[in-house]
Image (cartoon, rainbow over all chains, first blue to last red; front, top):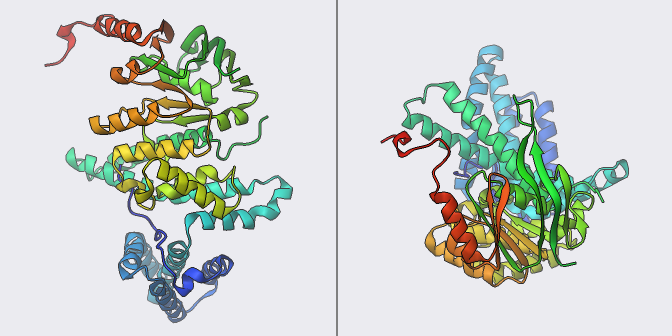
Amino acid sequence: MRGHGFLIANYVRGNSIIHRTPLWLKFLVVAACGTASFLIVDWAVSLVIFTVMCALFMLTGAGYRRLLRAIWLVAPILLVIGLFQWWQLGGPTAARIVLNVLVCVVAASVLTATTPVQELLDGVVALARPFRRFGADPERFALTIAVMLRSIPFIAGAFSDVRDSARARGLERNPRALVLPVFITTVAYARQTGDALAARGLGEPERD
Amino acid sequence: MNSISFSKVSVRVVVDGSDSPKTLLHDFSLDLTERRIGVIGANGSGKSTLLRLINGLMEPSEGAVMVHGENTVAQVRRVRSNVGFVFTDPLSQLVMPTGREDVELSLRRSIKNSMQRAARAEKVLDRFGLLPLADQSIYELSGGERQLLALAAVLAVDPTVLVLDEPSTLLDLRNRELLRRTVAGLDQQVVMSTHDLDLALDMDRVLVVESGRIVFDGAPHEGVARYRELCAAPLPGATLGDVPR
C-alpha cells in the first residue's frame, strides 16, 4: 500500500519565525482563514489573502515544491468545483470559492509544516480540556486528529493501488471497479486501526 | 500469578446468513507460565483468536481469561497496559507519519510532559537501533524496519507480556532473522503465532491449533512434528486432481 498524496504538508524541522510563533496564534490564523472563507465576497481580497498565506508558507523554509504539492493534490477537485461554479454563478464567484479553499489548504499546511505532530496533539488536548467537565476525554480528541491525519494518505494510497489494479485488468473506466475496492479497503483499514489502537490501550474508555 | 490462564474458554461468533453461531475456539483450558510460547496452525485454525483473547481484543463466549491475575474482560484496561500486541502488518498498527511520533503516541498516556516523552521515545528508538530512521516516513522504511518499529512502539510502555500475531509473515529472511534475535533478547513473556517453524522451535512451549481446537500442547520439536503431520494429511474431500493445472 502506498501512503502518499498527503493533503497538507508534513512537519519540516526549522527555526523560522513561523516555527517560533506560538501554537495558539497559528491555530487562530487557521481558524480565521476558515471563517474568512465564508465572509469574503470579493475574489480580489481572496487573492490577496492567498498570496499572504503563500508568502508565510515560503517563510517556513519548507520550499515551494511542498507548497505546489499541497495545491496540486486538491487541484482536480477545485477544477471541478470551479467549473461548476463558473457555469452556475459566474467567473468572480468561482474564483472566490476556489481561492478561499486554497487559502484554507495553505493555512493548514503552514500550521502542520511548522508544528511537530505531538505538539499539535498537545495543543488539541489543551483546547479540549474545558470539555472534560462534560465527560469529554481530551486525549481522545487528540487521537481522533492523529488518526484523521494518518488516514488521508492511506486512502489516497488505496485509491492509487486500486486504480493500478483496475488498469491492469482493463477496468480503468469502470467506476464500480474503482470505488467499491477503495470503500472495502478503507472499511478494513478502519477496523484494523481500531484494533491496533485498542491493543495499545489508546482511546479506550474506562471500563475497570 | 505470572501466568496467562484460560479457564473453560470457548469463542463463538454470529455469522451473517447463518442461524447457528460459528465456533472459532472450542472449550479449552490452559495455563501458560513459560517465557516463550509459540502457537502454530493452518490459516483460519483459530491462532489469531487465541492471541486476541490475551489482550482483550476478543472476549470469550464462555469461560475466563486471566493475565497475571487480571480478567481480560472486567479489567481490560489494566490488561492492555500490561499486554503489548504486535500485528502481522505493521502499517495497520503504526498510526503516526514517523517512527518518533508513533513511539511518542504510545507514551502519551503514561508521560504527560512532552520533553520527558520525547527523551523516552529517543531512548526506546535507540535501543532498537531505529534512531537514524526516527524522522523518516513510515512508508520509506523497509518491512523489517517497520516491524521493528511496531515492536518498539509497543515495548515503549514496558508491557509484561508481548503477543505477536504472525510477525514474520511479511518479512524476508534477513528481516526474519533480525526479528528472531530481537524477540529472543526480550525480557517479556512472549506468546507468538507463526508459520515460521524455525521460529517455533526457539520457543519453550508450542501449541498446535487445528479447526478451533488445541490438538497439541508441549515441546517445540514434537509440536512442529505434529503440525507437519497435520499439514501432510489431505484436506477433506480434496484430491490432487482438484488442483487446477
